[in-house]
Image (cartoon, rainbow, N blue to C red; front, top):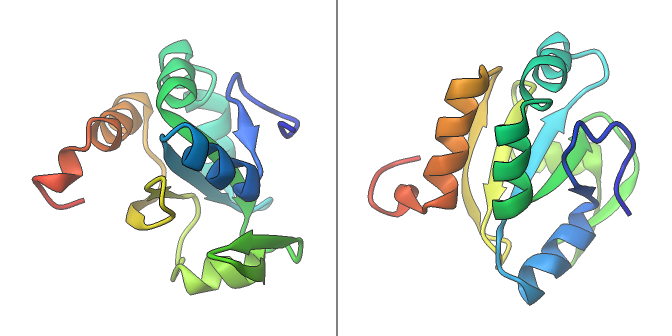
Length: 137
């Protein structure tokens, strides 16, 4: 069930993304955001609408949007969390932050802050091509 405001990206719940990754291995990309976050809105307005970004995400990742202030319950690593609790557990200190998980739910890495189209595409390519295995995230 994709969320509203898709920006051409297929957004899944965290549970759907993790289940999908087990059946058809792809990385999971978490877009950690907040309603008041100006830079999150800028990513959604200026970067997500780019067709190459959309294609890269939809072909290589299971995308999940997480409101870091939400008390909505989610399941991660067989534990029930609120989205707010999970954000704290991930050590989030800025929005937006992109967190990447492998298909086994293990953390690949994270990148806080706004990125323009080119920088974001570089990050997506870095993760999709598993370049992080040979160099630091």
